[in-house]
Length: 211
Image (cartoon, rainbow, N blue to C red):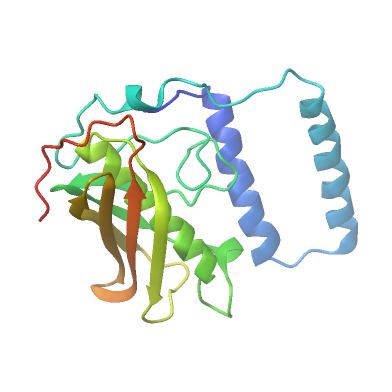
């Protein structure tokens, strides 16, 4: 379930993410900022003159027939906003299969800051939506987010290696009930519960066994 961008596109995505953190995290005079703005506007105009590009429209259920092994990286679309290697908005999580769920490591940076010295709550919610969605690759079934609830237990720090987990707890027909935690050195800083809905044409039989 992953497309393969050129190495140059992946490098550009990483550079843009770092640029965003540097803009937020460092002082600069207006002359430098104006120069960078002019350069970026020029590059944007060059890109806008190119052929339209969009995510390939393969069948939704064609992506769930490649099993992910224990400890193996869970694949993601290269342009996916939260985890894609080519996306300027990626949070760059490293997501691996962990039992019948996933375990991801992540570190939030300056561009993710909400209240001083802590991650913005919306960024945390977006992370959970993506990480819980990656569980679908483990169980080999497609679904869409129907409901997502976040409980913020403590401040989510920046510049620290955090762990985010996700798993399927149960199923009712086409509804998959998932949950997960975000931890800092073993301490839970946020929890999530969600309901993912399988499309009506999906096979509701599954081989996963909730932990």
